[in-house]
Image (cartoon, rainbow, N blue to C red; front, side):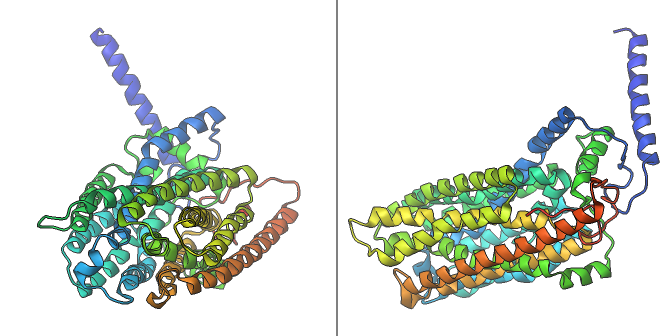
Length: 507
């Protein structure tokens, strides 16, 4: 290449960069803090360009979301795996102590959620996420060396407090990068890490159970391995995950504008750091907010107990050995992953999130009836495990519930409130759920299962009421606009879902 060619190439690159900066300065002003300067309503994005942008988000963003959720699942699940590895005896746990270790973690999340959601609204979301993971990794190191109940209780509460940032951060990033119709797949992908956690936890539990004669117990080595993995993951997220599409170092200025414009149809914007009192008032007076609390609360009243006591049920109630109980967690994790894939496929295919959730409640009702009516024996062991696996189907409602939050809430101050209330419901259900498994009811916990049947009925009723409300709101807006399609002109003006006439609820 001649020096003339080189000068020409440099000149072209400079002109392109200058044009992008000029376009950025001339972009119309909007209320959205992160979208401001990158909004271009006239920008046309072809289907091929949209697919290219989505694939880039899948490569550059989704793996970090999955990694963060896997860390959270592994960290808070350590005591479940350790519970049949001699951990309870080593720390001197008695009576409801084990159940309280779970309850206190969720109490920490309840306390942390209002603070976490205001942090997500105000500060760089990726830095909050990565920093939180690093902090709770340090706490997990402490848990590995705690050999008494009081410090375990304290650490579990603090773990919950710092883990409260995960859900709001991941939902915020999902809404920033993906359209509503893409979010079922994306949410299922990072939330299915719960299933992967069951598989990894089962493998680690099986492997480290063999570590008997050592300075550290097997469960301690396992906890240390998970802590190291989380620490490395937190640092990776801090370095490489961008806080928003407009702050992605790997994206060109033109790509940043396209990433912003492709989510215009969501009518939710990217981020606004201004606190708006009127949006807080709307959040607390909107009946949908309280339905958003009830949906995860009722679901986790069941799922939280099943997840916490799964190893003990398989070991004590069904009569399997400790090693076999750890291994049986692996297919249970596979089952969870498959159900997460199935529910996102059905939601995308039917656009009927709430009806699909009702359908996913039925297998749990049937499985619960089997556990109540069939007594454990050598002949029924296999059938009871199959029924218990069927009860993992209801857990797949988790991503669907949070889709009802992420896709149906707008206005960044309002979202910070509705996100907090929804996650408090989620954590509250998980906190109470283990207390339904009283030690006096062991090993089959029949009374716990009877309570679950009542909760399933309440959950189905809540889904139906929620659907009626949202269908009514959509019909009124469609009637008001007539045959004119939504123009989405107010997408980045930080309006709430009730204020923006173009907003449509996903049902």
